[in-house]
Image (tube, rainbow, N blue to C red):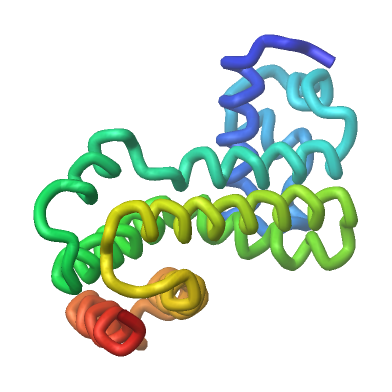
Amino acid sequence: MRRNDERRAALIDAAIEVLAEQGARGLTFRAVDGAARVPTGTASNYFANRDDLFTHIGARIYERLQPDEETIVRHLEGAQDREKFTAVMRETVRRVAGFRTGYLALLELRLEATRRPELRAVLTRSVRADVDANVAGHQASGLPGDATSVRLLHMALNWLIVERLTLPEVYSEQEADDLVARAVERLA
């Protein structure tokens, strides 16, 4: 397998786009090569098989969904009250929904994980690490609410993101913002 990390990341990012646009059946090495605008056969030089590609996609999506350092610092500034918590949750929903193809690809991966044990293991580790990091960060920040509140918000807001990305007419952006505020209010 080739070791050019930049090229590998570009191929994985192209695979995310293919997976979001064409679903798991459309995710072929040829489709990834085309999306990455590289010669045919390039992706197969970097990934042993589709399972390997799926696993790398799962890890990469979670890398790209993480907030940058500036966002984290901004979340820790000022009063750590319910209003701040609401603002943080709204920003999180917008940031995650802003990576539309990544989130849609993640939904495809979750379905594939029911049939691919290695992918299920990668996604399980990634989701568990994400939830644990959110709980730890929340507790360290001094924001209101406990670990259970964070977990419940994680589940509720993930479904709100699914609605916004797949059926955007169900809730307007304002309705989504209001729902985030009500969820924080009730759970914190």
